Length: 386
Ligand SMILES: *Cc1c(COP(=O)(O)O)cnc(C)c1O
Picture (cartoon, rainbow, N blue to C red):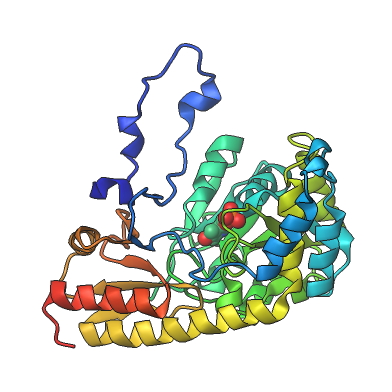
């Protein structure tokens, strides 16, 4: 059972169907991404995929019902291929123009187009050795060469590693095709300050730099404010985490109009209508309800801080997190074993069976009640007194 929640490069050795003679060479060579599981078990405390514990703004439902009307007749018609309503709502919220905004079916789709449109060049791209594990998958899908840059010992990104000739490997590397990293990073939760990002942008004026800000609303400062000064930065956001809409699949990117146009060209060569009618109006409502959004983020941050204190008390080392999850390890207890014991108590967290981080657990910040159930269970498992 636990294997399903453990990322392993060998996972796909156990695929359901063996290779078929009908498969293209591209498909033969793919190593697909393995998302955190979505078990169909009742009464589960689900802290494994960084979903928001709060429902979306009530205005989302109102918007969707209004779009549906009495007979859902509008579903007869294609949606706006450009989702202009949504681009305008995002532009307004972030103080940019709609021409600087691209929208897609979840930020994973936006990122996929980014690899094809902006990162595929005849030089390798750079990303951290420990990061969002979809990046190497897109490299495989689109044939993008890449090099990984080791995080520092404390799991932080060192901006100097992305500046200058060496790129972490003295004297080894010349030109690069692009740079991508999440900020805060996943799965560490560690934040890179905006001036460090600006340092990377300045050092790489002829290289696209993609900042994946899936978690920035939980304690970071967005690099969107750098877009007006740098034509090489693209900032990617999702409504899945801070706007509680993982089930609706909406993400966006903000950057110079020339970068956005590259994404539009790929999108319009792939799927003209990535966002359906309900997703467009729902996302607009979520973007416009800023008060509700801020209230949810504040609550998640407060719970993250109390959860971190509790975990320290239980004997965990917790990396400083600016995200809606924490990354923690226990000096005496093996991470895979802890994940297994928690699962037996119907609590699921994420464990990555990968070098450097196989003793960590990534735990999504749930409601206060869910986090209390988690720490109670961990106290039992580890024999730590409350
Ligand atoms: C969750 C996540 C995404 C994808 O979000 P979707 O919009 O749900 O596709 C992208 N990047 C990082 C780092 C994430 O953690």
